[in-house]
Amino acid sequence: MSDKPNFIVFMSDDHGHRDLSCMGATDFQTPNFDRIAARGAKLTRWYSNAPICSAGRCGILTGRYPIAAGIPGNVGVNAAGLSPDLPTIPRALKKLGYQTYMSGKWHLGNREPFLPHNHGFDHWFGFTNGCIDYYSHTFYWALTSGQQARHDLWEDGREVYRNGEYFVDLMRDKAIEHIHKAKSDGRPFFMYIPFNTPHYPMHAPEAYMERFAHLSRARQLMAAMLAVMDDALGKILDELERLDLFDNTCIFFQPDHGPSREPRNWTDGTALPFPGGDTGGLRGHKGTLWEGGIRVPTLMSWPARVQGGKTIDEIGIGMDIFPTMLTAAGSDPEAYQLDGMDILPMIADNAPSPHADLFWTRGQKGETRAIQHNRYKLLLDKNEIHLSNLDIDPNETTDIAGDKPELTNDLLARLNAWHSAL
Image (cartoon, rainbow, N blue to C red; front, side):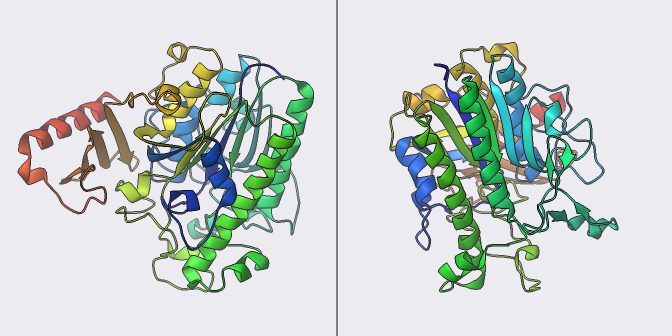
């Protein structure tokens, strides 16, 4: 293999900040996620670029604010997806001689020209909509808009049928197959492995449900789905170790956003909000710009460059992954129009975060917005304003906007100026 590092981005879907044992979960264990943290770093103040699926993924792959990249919300069944004209991590790395693979959930467009092979992936396997039945690989949720259910399993743009086989097992095995291909080729590789767990439908195999039968129904479902993903991740890590690739592979793991409260997560028709995910006390959840919706459990390892067992309390965000990997590969992020920043010095060398202001939007026109500046966070929801000092109030329980009118006005002006400039 080349001396250049390999890269893997793992993702999860609808995942609470405390829902890994290395991040504080006590009612189940995630030994393989913990293995990444032990060989690298856990990042306790890391953010997704959005509180919903498509936009969060867009931030990682493009290094841009999602609204600037044309993906302010979720990509619907018939909507246009991510523009093939935008640079992405795989496309940029291909120019540097990298092989590029994807296995998992796309959700950035389900038709041409928005499919993964138009965004720099040599090979890809998975589904294109927001979720699928884990066994039939059918997208049923279009039915809520009056459209037919559709089968949604693809390889390199060709529909494939693996009826009855569990999707997490399929994407795991395909990822391992890609690793073997990359090893045989000898060139460095970039791999994107976005799990769909623990997104509904909560289809955990029976053995996993039995393992957590002592927990409440909601927590049983969540723990079982996360354990499924942890085991799949472990097999991929084992293969990297066996092929002597682990030490020089830069791995990022990041969820797309916080946990879902949607009643669809229940498997028995319950109509109540689903309480299965654990934000560790952070306010909010998927779909909100409170910390529980955008602050996510994130891990990074690269044993050849980063000392293991680190805890990083500095601020980072999904769009930083693109420029960080580009720099690590020996290229210059300045060649691209990126909103993210190289945070490898922050992780490897204990440098401070390079970020001053960070911004978020929710809604097609950014109706809900937020800015974080020097650990102050202002959230604007239509005409309602909430200001928090996250250093002393990470759960955003107290609005201090009235106590700090000058700061409030300054942050509001920064936020609106940024949004207007887009």
